[in-house]
Image (tube, rainbow over the protein chains, first blue to last red):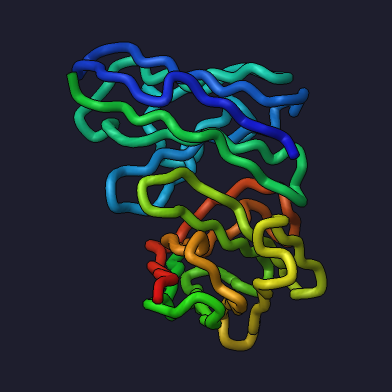
Length: 108
Length: 122
């Protein structure tokens, strides 16, 4: 199985801050990396796929980068609606998808 | 806009069975791979299974292999998850999700339902 490790597991930030979340794969996954946002009590929502492609309708303050084993999700200017939990997920092994443990973004 | 609505969750005793359903609308269901994912209370996401657009190909996570069965009825625009030999650790919100690509499984989960809660307890 490909293990996905996110850091930090939680962070506190203020509106307007630049926020960076990292995700590391246990082996190279090329750019087969997706990011999801989950607001409290809601279903996850696809934000970014193929490491850096913004899903339709997602604000441009979100961006993704990386390839191989190390990936980053960046929120350039945190907005109130961005307080949520973020998950990375590898789609390199399509027969066994795995998620990172999540990063909870909280209000400072 | 893609709509996915799960149902069938509830309280079941250990060793029992439950069948979840996912009703799809606003897209051509028969053209897309579908998947089930779960989330235990306060925990992260765990992928469980996917099924091809025709239903001929299925894959499972080791944690549910041999106990859970994914099926679909394209005539009814519905996805199912038959869950047998349930354990306390199967307690979770179960989500269905649609694959991103037309008749191809990329492993990207583009649209999700709102989830249905399954509680396994005596």
